[in-house]
Image (cartoon, rainbow, N blue to C red):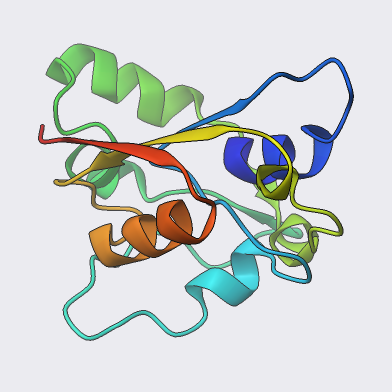
Length: 137
């Protein structure tokens, strides 16, 4: 959610610029739910488990491969075991005024990411006018 949070909260006058690290950078009226609704063919599918009591989490067995592939196995296992579920309703929180329309922005495109398709990262970075850097691994 970090990208959505800075996109909305970044309009505060104390914020000088926005840095997206393989994150969602929604436009006005968009939410994470809308951005992930129709993934392109062949896009990675995040291992999100069905909602439980109104919350989502990632499948622990697939966590490392999808979310922490470059992390030592014991650290990835700890991350999987200590993840905090997020509310289903948070997926539908729409951005009202994207800060990237008025603030300088930077975007790190993780070319091996298994959560947000690279083409989606590039599209969001481009429309935000972000200075973009690609990083594999």
